[in-house]
Picture 1 (cartoon, rainbow, N blue to C red):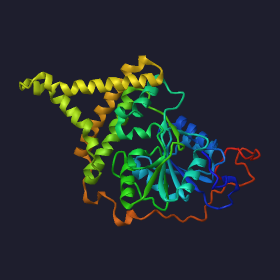
Picture 2: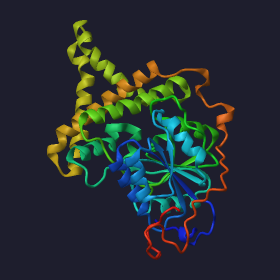
Picture 3: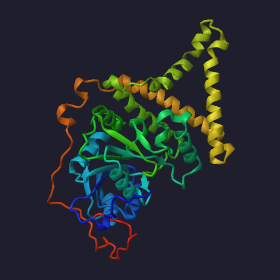
Picture 4: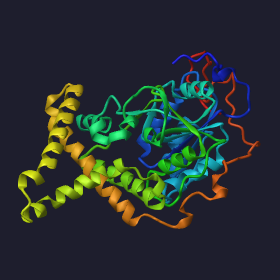
Length: 384
């Protein structure tokens, strides 16, 4: 990406970080270390600070200290995801809040590209891009990522998992493992849903008139689940959050969200319909069409991966996604909170404003960070 309107971060003499990188830890120290290493390797990045939530045990502290000694760690263990991220927002001082998961690794130009996109699109308040499958993933993880990025696999949210054309978008294009929001527009996350808190936030921002920009250059690599059970649990948890949001706010309902649930209910009801003397050919028409669609999508996925032998796995994972989506939405609608105060109040609609001038993570133009090396133009950036 070309960006001529802003200067490299090392030439910036401001005392405030431009970007506050907010990470919620919980996938183990190896994942966190890889994530921090990718941030440590940022090239020509603007000034940024690092805030990490989770359980700051001895091993976590050692990893953070080795990479970013000046990072802020906040104990948020035991809180729902939204509630755990809110303290990071309150302590952040950057103009842009970049939310990453700790099992994400960033490309070396992520922060630089975010600076460029935000500068070139001042009318936008939300920015994000795809989360791709890491190159060193297992065959299972590669197929999993390909299923998620396919239209048949995950429908309109497939754009989160594979690069699409840049442009303005809505909440279906973004996910919290790789999401940036201007602090002036930010509101707290809902604190009592199991997952998908970013969808509730982005829906609220959209109602306010905030614009969102999708940019494929804002790419990260997101580790996929290593086996079927973990993948199914991830899908169920995420979609349950979507169902909880729809239960509490009917304005978030889209008919497309109920398609997997409708198919799931129909398939479960098919034996009863046949037993009720309905023509079997008529009852089975929808399952046959669905099966043909899944097989066609699986063949395309396997062809894209260059491994036709992956077709059965691709078909199976596609069905798993649909089944989990259908069951998760129904569970979220049936069990999610529905209090009248679940939506944002006028108080929480206000942007989070933090004033902590006494703490300044300024990165010096002449000092390289803790490594003690000179700082040429392409030296990886480190917050101070």
